[in-house]
Image (cartoon, rainbow, N blue to C red; front, side, top):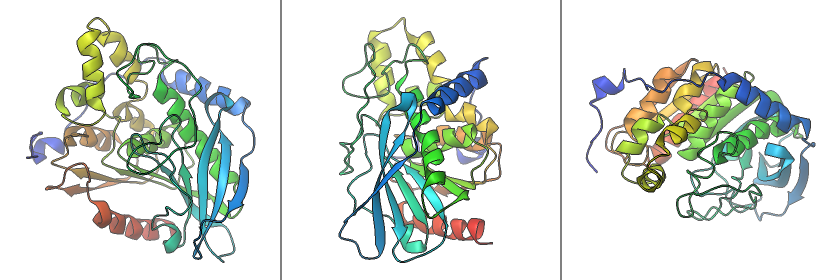
Length: 324
């Protein structure tokens, strides 16, 4: 895949043209208040993962409409005291995985809450355990992008983002967590969700969003040639009179719209040959982000982004952020 998007000087100043809905703040305030009113404290059950350097617990917490959401809670073994925690969200179709599927964060001394994605969990070996009990109208094949897309009240990502915000509530209640040092993180869909959470909370220590999805939908839908965005284009190719309603709904979950409210320090990554999350859509979110921010650009990478190079960048950034 060649570099097909805007030239870098234009990317650095690119802004989304999406207009925030007039009731955006009321919509999310009401949504989160309703979810918290029926929430229960998280349930934590230690499990035998086969790992000796990492302790793993099975967590169930309350998400949208009080629905039970699964997660893995991991800590470095034998470490006492309250630790910073990374709340990590999943890429499209992925779930929380198996107990032993740990990343670098516990090995670097951080706790991690690996959050499941409702209704997903069959992609790239990361299985899921959380159903989505809410129905929806016509949608494209088996994907999630168009479920409830004609009404923000019914849209799938309203539920998923609510789960993600309440995952931070749950993380702050876990034993061995410093509630003042919560960092949200994710790749692709997970990165877009992390950005949405950063806009809907003012108590985060940091945000790590790699090649984030869910940003600048009008441009993404006509630019991306692979991945989830084409689901929306395929839906609109059949439902030709639904475009206005669909994009009106998408504006409520658009990271490039939401992050104008974000305040936590953020580390982004972007890949300039990414045909799943076009670079201009990533820069749309980065350039609109209201808090302190940095971005790492990978000129010759597709949607895999910086991969392990970016992990090294994140570990250095976390060390400076959380242990100045």
